[in-house]
Image (cartoon, rainbow, N blue to C red; front, side, top):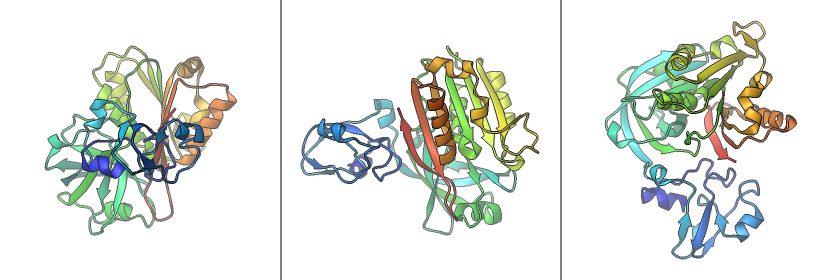
Length: 323
């Protein structure tokens, strides 16, 4: 069903495509289908009995009517392939690179702040997934990449990339995106997981916030710390936005040491009446979840995206889930 929806230019939010995250969970009003393979964390037996299914796994046996978990605005963002030229390469350090693309058809790409695209690696048939670090209205699109030894995109950006190179990207994709603000927001970023949160902050620039937003940005080492100037800029132009950053390397320059979970303050969690947006590697996501459970805090909404880092691969969105 997910493949068919994209061919029909209907964007069902999904990420894992493996029946593991539950992002695409939809209610089937009518029709017959095979539910496919999935794990119970993504879809419980009770939900399946009540008519819920995962479009990334379900195979229709007849015409279907589905209620998909998104708004009309989101559904109209079409996943399509776009050609682009590389206009800027920012080699922040030996661990992090930023790059910017100018699309041939920028007006045809509509995305929500927090979503990602699949970017083709020049000279290969492979793609890598990266969240936008730029805002939906920006004329160019930008990304942050963690350099990993043996990674296809890592080696291209580190060793061969030149301004003017041609790249293709396909998207937008993902269910991790900024929702309407109804309460305080706590943003948590690990490493290049900062990218989608930068996109959200760019979208909020100039908006009149009714509730405060605080960002905690955690990195391992000095080389991983990027875009502080941009965060300081947002703190100046977004009334109600504040941020802190920390570093697990005790010898680093960050004023705060340790992990983001060491620096939660009561006002950030607002007694649980808070929306949490978290993007980082799986251990960070699980650490935050465990910390909140230990503190007896259940956020009103907890939106997260895991970036899976495997050997010889770049960091890619593994899943995004809201609960």
